Amino acid sequence: MQVSANAGGLVFHFSSVKKMSSDLLAAAPLGQGVVYKRQIDSEWTESNEGLPHQTHINRLQVYVDRLYACSNKGLFYNEDGLWNSTELAVGCYQYKEFGEVGLAGTSCGLWFTEGAEWHLMMRSDLIVYDFLYLPQYVVLGTNEGISILDRLTTTWMNFKYGSAVTSLAVSHGRIIGATEHGDLLVGNQRGGFERYRMGNTFIFSVVTRDDEVYACSDRGLYRVSRIGNQISLMALKIGVQVTDVDVDDQHLYIATLFEGVQQLERS
Image 1 (cartoon, rainbow, N blue to C red):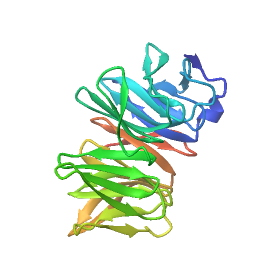
Image 2 (image 1 turned 180 degrees about the vertical axis):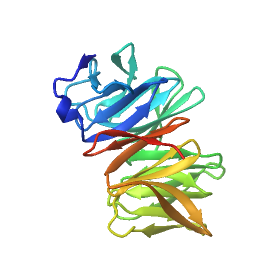
Image 3 (image 1 turned 45 degrees about the horizontal axis):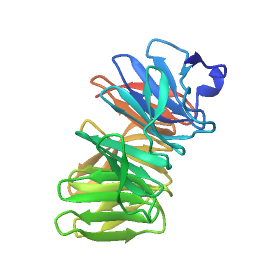
Image 4 (image 1 turned 90 degrees about the horizontal axis):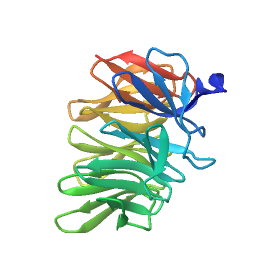
């Protein structure tokens, strides 16, 4: 790792952020790999050794304090400051672990691994940007919309909206998703979804952290809540373009497009 030679350029355009150990943050500047920073430090430190040239990070994930990078060149993990390939070499958009099983949303479907080898799990015909692995359902956010597999009957329900669904979450018993056009899809509890546009607000993503769901947008950060039977958005930080959020017991950490990584008190 080395201190960035372009410190000013790393002040903005962050696409993802993760809180790792007690005081270590990892973030992904758009098109510039991965950087680290101690909370008390002002300088970001680049950590790109082992990543292929022109690697673009789509998402960062952390499991047992191991950092994973979902990228256009595949899925990588960091060990002792060096990036290593997981041998999943297709474009990767999301990675989650369930016990000993790892699942990855890719440019050619949903893949899984229980060790060193990766295997196609489902839907090689679709780009899977995000997914939910629920007790009865597997929900995919794809280039076509939302696809839901009923695990008991092995039947598919496909909802095509003319735009990709790039992130998914469950809030108050409803599946919600953000589309590539900045809309919010909300399950209507009648077997379908309603599409919402929040005024001029563009929703970049919905993110689940510690049983809370957050909406990251070009107007700020919102907590997804409920008023009566309706999903609502409660503003937490207004006036910045928020692309990602992570939390610990005391703080929210938000990645922004133009104002770096910011820290908020958690209420």
